[in-house]
Length: 149
Image (cartoon, rainbow, N blue to C red):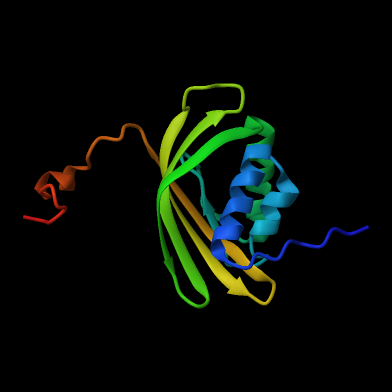
């Protein structure tokens, strides 16, 4: 019997399903979040290539789950920009292997979701590793209010 894909009513539901799939290393649940399209893009930190298109993204997650297994992952500082058919989520993720208590890495993420006839689906994930949460070089020109001087 074929499993019907979950229909996400908004980008927040799609993102919650994404993180649950990542925590469980569940490939089927992960790919249910992604739009089945030739133009989706996934860039993992330290990846040697940009994954473009559904088959490449599927293969990337297959290898990632086989290599790392379930993860503890906690998004924070999430900012969401949402329109009627597109949503951009940006924030910080702390990652650890499921068996470890200390974070393995901290990274910045950007997720883009598109509203489709089948609900909201991820079309882009871009992650950059943050080796330390130290200010970036250009932050030195910002005052406490975040204004540029």
